[in-house]
Image 1 (cartoon, rainbow, N blue to C red):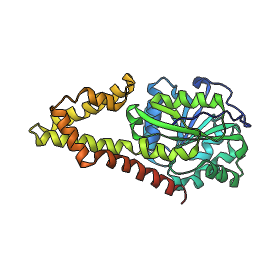
Image 2: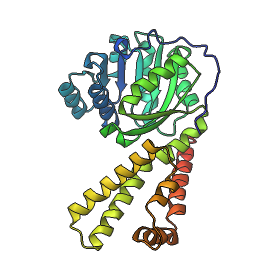
Image 3: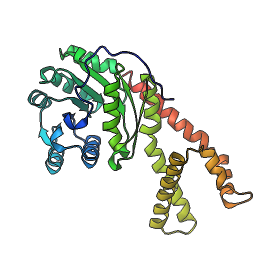
Image 4: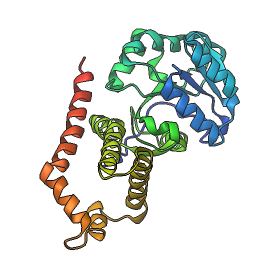
Length: 294
């Protein structure tokens, strides 16, 4: 459930609601950051508004190819450029090493968007406080994207440290360039987002693979079976999103009495597919909760 709160923020707001006037800095430029950068650029964000830092050469090569300014040191990047939005795209155990870079930042009032799984807002704030990084001037947001950022079809949820309508619009405009993003008012629900849409692509990939294997078992060539399986999932997902109908209703549309589809649906129900998928999301959600306590 997506909830909306009416808490009034005490922190400063970003000066403009238009992305064209904002400088976006990436701390960490691995696969997810590169997917986001590509999506932003493809959606019209000027490369001059993007900067990134990483210690790895492949990240540098990627940024050079995309005409994005690159730094090998986060502290230098934050000191040299007035960054409005800091996107932290590192592994959770690296936060303690990279967040102190904000201490010497050129622009004190900024938004920090973390995509680190399992790291709660109060932990990020605590690291900034310990680093004497003026944490009271940093507006922290957690976003949980998924790997589908790479094709600009991500499913994401975000939660804010403090409610701020202008920042909320900026986040939705920015992250909306690479997929669907939903606002969550309770940070505890981010674990559910992690279990569902964060881990979900792996579950769907398994389902596509199983569909294709079923096609091969039924006599189809492997390549043909895989393409048909993937397109079937894509088309079905679009029908759910565009029709507004419940998946059960759509299922009933294609299950005629004593037909081929109901025979297959019966096999899935007998095998417990529904419960297995629910348990997979639940297990992933619980694992996210466990990671937040480490």
